[in-house]
Image (cartoon, rainbow, N blue to C red; front, side, top):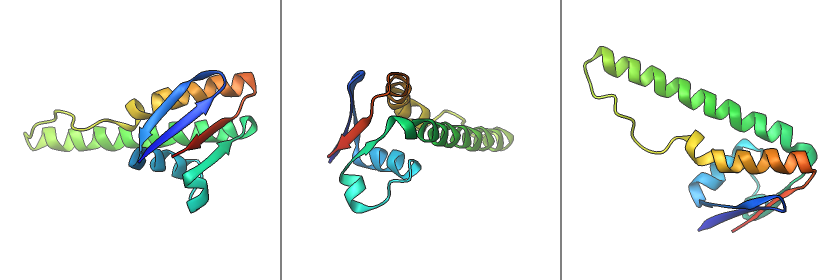
Length: 109
């Protein structure tokens, strides 16, 4: 399943289900209906953006700590997987543009 996030001021952002659910959980959307489709009002975007930025910072701190521990053990520190920052950047851009224009973001599966 795919999530499609839409705004009138930015290109659509498409995410795989696990990644879309992660973002929606950070935005406080946990009910089954709000996970299937919903709307993020422009007035709610500052809080949503902040929550996403905090989650990114937390993940990056955890990765840095894991890299430090791996270096101390002499293990490989090559990053694996796609970070939350990489996945969320297009959606953060959409949210910032939408907030500035006073437009909502909608999503559906």
